Every structure is written in structure tokens, then in C-alpha cells.
Amino acid sequence: MSERVLDLDPVGAGDTEILEVSMGPHHPSTHGVFRMDVRLEGEKVVRLKPVFGYLHRNHEKIAEHGAYLAAIPYTDRLDYLCSMTNNWGYCLAVEKLAGISVPERAEYIRVIVSELTRFQNHAGLIGFLLQDMGASGTPLMYAFREREKILDLFESLSGARMMCNYMRFGGVRVDCTPAWLDEVRSMLAGLPKFVDEFEALLRGNEILMARTQGVGVLPRELAINAGITGPMLRASGVNYDIRKVDHYGIYDRFEFRVPLGDHGDVYDRYMMRVLEMRESIKILEQALRDIPAGPIMDPKVRLRGLRPKAGEAYGRIESPKGELGFFLISDGSTIPYRYRVRPPSMINLTILEDMCLGQNVADVVITLGSVDIVLGEVDR
Amino acid sequence: MTALPTPEDIKAQIEASVPGAVVTVIPNSSPSAQRSLLLDHEHARDAALFLRDHPVLRLDFCSLTTGVDWLDTETSEKVKLKQLVDGVEKEVEETRKTKIPGYLEAVYHLFSMEKKHGPVILRLRTANRTDQTHVPSFTPVWRSAEFQEREAFDLYGIIFDGHPDLRRILMWESFVDYPMRKDYVPPADDPLAEVPA
Image (tube, rainbow over all chains, first blue to last red; front, top):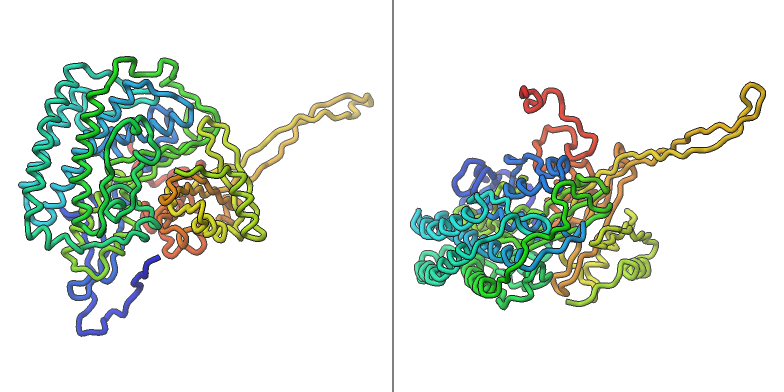
């Protein structure tokens, strides 16, 4: 447990007054409607309390009123940049609950769309992070140029660019054509060059180094205890990637490395994303090489009116933001008795105060930017 | 990945190391076969510390924390009784109802980042759904429970004793009810409830 700064005397020991600032909810750096109650002594942060819930629509209650199938389009709207991985997390939980198997081709398609999702999420995050640092527009547009290509692919596969609603328990909704796979291959051929260019643009940048190195440090022990997951955890040097730990889907068939940081600062978190983009390209190349022909749905699965036996299951995946889990309790009817999302974005905010204490207020913005939150998932 | 002991083994280990602890294994008939351990309130914190610091188990990562609402249930049983009806002894069927009080449940999914195994699922139950909705907080053991216990308090009304900052998290401060409960009815003055169909 870390030390927390509690209520301080309104007038500090020095000659500065404590200033209370409410950052947000409408602030461009909060990436949505998110507020931080910050207390400042001069420019130093002495207290920071995240306040959220502005986008709360009780996603879990909605899902507990509909059939198992009906929740899939709603999961798109959790982390609305990564609808494909959200679909997968939920479908995996239902598959565990009802004992459903997935055909091989569908597993490959799932890996392909999920790694494309991871790539565009990380590229977008770096763009936004640099925007927060003052590199207005240019890096973000570089990232969005590549993201557009990926969203075009999603659109031609699923019919939607962001709200894909693509996966089903027992497989995926529609098959991909050989032409689509060729499009992915040709797009993929350009990605390593983009990552090189993107990295070169930034890695040699002195201002970036000064702004990010040693800022917002998250120690390893605290990261584990606070349940931080995803690139943020690995930036603090903990080797924990659910693709490697659980081998869900077919991730044991691919060769890829798990990048690790050793300082746990904003720079490491930024570098994690760059390195993970490179690993995603590797996985994509292998998946596109090996994808077999075959069915894309388990024909025995009743999509409508699925009635799992009474019991419960927890399924989790490595989403671009961290561990995305779904906890389901069935009472034997067609409607889940309990539906719970483990939102990585929200849990990764637990230690925002710890990372920001003693820092300048300007660094709060980039520390928050390096957490990678999407309010659709934080508030649900 | 090291093999995780069965729930029965973990139960035996907790009961051996934490004197007085009462652990019950909750079955799960779904294909996932993820069974859980129900802990008693008094020894829950010690049991949690034991699971976290045990050299083999090392459950250092509390992934998911949530609440579940179980309503009062009634079981009815048909009993055959002999009764005198109009001076003649007849067999009459009578239904007897037994009321099982509902409770709120806090569920914790534990994993180990060091040993890369899991999940071990812990459950805590409140005495009822109305006035005794306390359970001990696990936030002092696993910081990751902080926001999720606040959420279970906010949406289910489970009060976590020992939580450092138990406030509403998603709903606003002046909100009174617990919207995730199964018998929740939105208030009449809810602006959303008045939208014409």
C-alpha cells in the first residue's frame, strides 16, 4: 500500500496556498467526460481524486434484461475503439459457461481482427498522447491515416467501421473472402514502415524525452497489488500477458514476444505500445499464412434462445487496454442472471493519484494520457 | 504455469492456517467448473492475506470484484395430512411454504501474476438484503478492489467494512437506491421514465 496524502491544512507550511482545480469533465485532455479533483500547492499536485460516471448507462443491467445474444452489440460500445476485442471477451465467457467450441477458421479470423484492433488502438493512443504533449495534430494524423485503412477493412468485413458486432459465441458472424485476406496482406506490408517512421519521428525528439522520462512512475509492486493490467503493467516490468498465460483461442500457435519496460514511467508506457504494434504485425503475418478453410460457426450452437445450464463462468482476454473479463451467472434461463464486465480502463485508474502526487500539474495530463482510458468502458 | 490446488485443498489449507476459519466450497455445475470458496466474515481478511502471501499460491492479483443480488426465495412443499372433514377422516393436501431469506454476495476472482495460475474465487455473503449488508473489505489486501468495491456499494448497497474511501462512484452523491438490485424500481420522478412511448 502506498502512502496517501489526506486532508491538508488549507494553508500549507510554506507561503503558498492550496488551490483546488477541477480538471474536466469537459477538457480536451480527459479523452471524454472525466473529471479530476486536483489540489495544488504551487504547481505540485498534493491530492487527486478521479470522478467519473457521467457516461454511466448501467450496461450490466441492460444485459441482464436480454438474451445472451442481445448483449453482443452492447459490448461494442464499452471501449468503442476496440469493438472486436470486446466481442471476443464476451463470447469467450459465454463459450466457457455453455461449453461451446469454436471452429479453427473462426479462431484465426478472431486473431486477425483482434490484432488489427490492437494495432489501431496503440497507434491512436500514441497520437493522442503526443497531442496532449503539445504536438498538435501531426502525429495523430499519422496514426489516423493507418487507422482508416484498418477501419476500411472492418467495414468491408462486418459492415461497420467501429460498432462491428462481429463475433458470436461459437464463431464469427460472416466469413471473410480471399480478396479480403489479400487486402489485409497488402495493408500489412506497409505497416512496418509506418511504425519505423512513427518511431523515428518521436524517439529522437528531445522534448518528448524530457516530458516523459521519469514522469508518472508506477512501481512494480504497486502495479501488481492494484490490479493494473495490459501495456501499463508490462511497462512496470511485470511479465503478464493473458495471450501467453491463458493461451485463449489459438494464441499458443504464434511466436511473439512480450515487451517489458523497466522504469514504469510515461516513456516506458509509450514504448510498450510501439513494441506491441511490432509484435501484432508478427502475429498477423503468421495468422494470415496459416489460416485454414472450413466452417466459421459451430452448427450446434443455438444463437437465439441459448439456455446454458445453471452455473457461472469468468472469461478474460488481453484487450489492448488490459485484462477485459466477463463474469456470467446463469440460472438456467435464456437471460443471464448476472452479467459483469471487468473494465481494464477503470481499474487502471485506481493508481492515478499515486502516479501524480508531487508532480507538476502539466504532467497529470500526460500521465492520464499514458493510462489509455475510454470512458465508454470506465462508466459503462 | 504451476498447477493450482483444488478448492478442497485450498479450503483445508486456509482452515489449517487461520484458526477458526469456516470455508465452504460452492459447487458450479456449468462446463467452466469454476468452483468458489465461501468465507466467514470474521476470518475473511486473514484468509485473504494467507492466500496472497502463501509461497505456493501467491494470489497477488485480485482481478474482478463484484456484487450479486440473490432475492428471497420460497420453496413450497406439499404435505399430506389427515383431517376430520364432516366427521369423516380424509386425506387433505396442504402446501407449506418455507421462506429462504435473500442475501447480497461479494465475489472476488484471484489470480497469481507470479505463478501465472488462477482463478481462485472467493465469496462473502451478507446476512440479509436490508439492514445487515456488511462484509469485510479486501481493499487493504488488494488495492485493485478499491474502485470495484465502491461500485458494488454504489449499485448493490453492500457495505465494505474497512474500505478507506467508500463513496458512490458511478451514480451521483444524492442518489438513494441501489439500481443493480433485482427488485429495483426506478423512481416515478425519473425523467427517463416519463418519456412517452
